[in-house]
Image 1 (cartoon, rainbow, N blue to C red):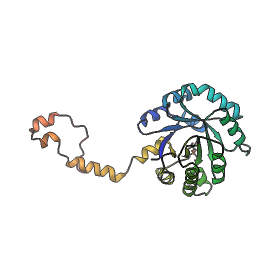
Image 2 (tube, rainbow, N blue to C red):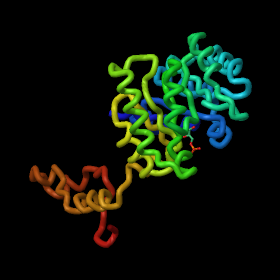
Image 3 (tube, rainbow, N blue to C red):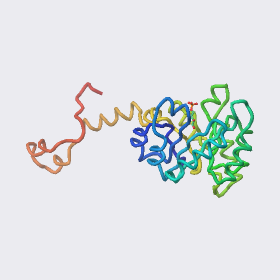
Image 4 (cartoon, protein in one colour):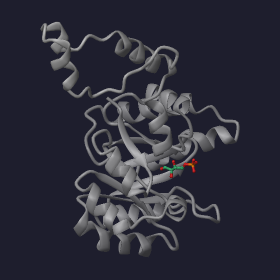
Amino acid sequence: MTKIFLDTSNIVEMKKWAHIIDGVTTNPSILIKEGGDIKEICEYISPKPVSVEAGGDFYTEAMDLWEWLKPLSEGLVIKVPFLKPNGQDNLLVIDSLIKEGITINCTAIMSFNQAVLATKLGCRYISIFAGRVEDEGGESSTLLRDVANYIDASNPEGVEPLQGVIVGSIRSPGDADRAIRSVFRDNHIVTIPPPVLEKMTQHARAQSTSAEFEKDYTPVKTLQGINNTQAEMIPHPMPQIRQGEI
Ligand code: E4P
């Protein structure tokens, strides 16, 4: 099944969703917006994968991040954007980092061609920003499906170094639904911000159905014929729903 990463630097959210998530992704903008201590995040998520992004000159910064955080995090992955701010590609930098033994997530990929080039290098992951592709009028589902198929056809055993696609830039439950359907095999990942993950649990009809069943529910003690006085003394775990509240 598709893996779910949490796209956040908020450790409270990581703890809240720890039973669901397979890893974490961060980026510099998330860290500015949400705060968080990168060292603490790496320690908490280990041994699961955590992506931490390099900036600046990319090569030295990635090396420094790796040397600092790798001893704390078995699953450390360094994110390097496919393009530099000036539009030049980072392929040579990424190739050099991989040759130094650094695990790389080539990030901010927006096209099939960029994805194909990044897969040549031995990255652990390539990150496609579905929302940003659509911001520019692109159609992300076909792109994601084609890249996932391309990777799986090139690497039928799903063996390292390239594990798969991380779909990022998910802004709604609908985005998550389409992304998961597009890259549904075990080696691929969709990274989801906590508010979107929260919304994915919700459905108005599921809630009203649960309330309906709770209203009609007969407690086990009652079914067992234990008298009402005794049954009422047993605390009920769910709030009682009254007529008209649904
Ligand atoms: C994930 O890896 C990305 O950094 C992130 O999802 C970008 O999301 P945004 O396009 O909503 O900022």
